[in-house]
Image (cartoon, rainbow, N blue to C red; front, side, top):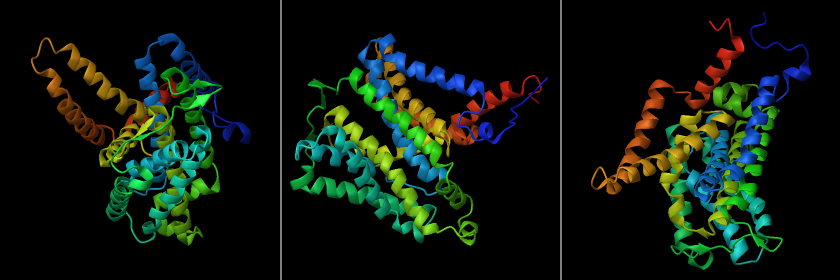
Length: 348
């Protein structure tokens, strides 16, 4: 009896999906994504799925930098703000088509991210985290004080995206903008780490001195990692701008940066599927607690006032529990389940 996965050709060994069961799981997931809005037919679940999709793109971008390259970043919220404000300003002030502002915003964010990645040449670990935290504060200060361009602390209203004369910013219609981009982001990232660029990122994460001895230009690849990561983060920010039709600096504070860092910690560092798991978990947890709180309002007086505090407490508790019980996150749990069935009946 065959127990495990065995390859007899390089083609099968190098495939993105190496076995029929992996291809079946991918097909079922795609079918779920396609059928979901038609089955539920309610705005709120579709809204949550849209939130998960945007968060997944941002989490993949952050995971490229933190999980794959080992460069700590606390500037996720600010880089998303760059993407959101760039897309919003181009659409609202300059009349650029909304679909064209999305790649432009991603490229602008990539340039800004690479600029703030320059300190990574001399810094690492906690010191680099502080440098990216400075980027978070600098960018938000520019956003809130550059009144002539960003509008300062006032919200930037973005015209609703139109396609064939119909608005696209409804939950159902924008769903078909977000999730194809999620799939494209995942595909590009998966193939990135099959190239020498991605392998250089991983080498820098594992041991940057050894990577430099091997001939890898550490500084250039660190800047490239910041740029590629920020590209996808800016893409997520641009989607937020067009989906919500309003951009305000309050959505991109340090709390947003910590939230995305929690997503990749809980989901699993250095993993595309972990980014999806973490984004789904951290998006659905507050919604679940809110619904539970509303259901208990008649039983526990003042429950509606306790909900924000319960969300914050659960947020910190979940991170602590994962760091203690499963540091590799939800991806490791999913991998253990797959390994069990792949090796059955000799799972030991």
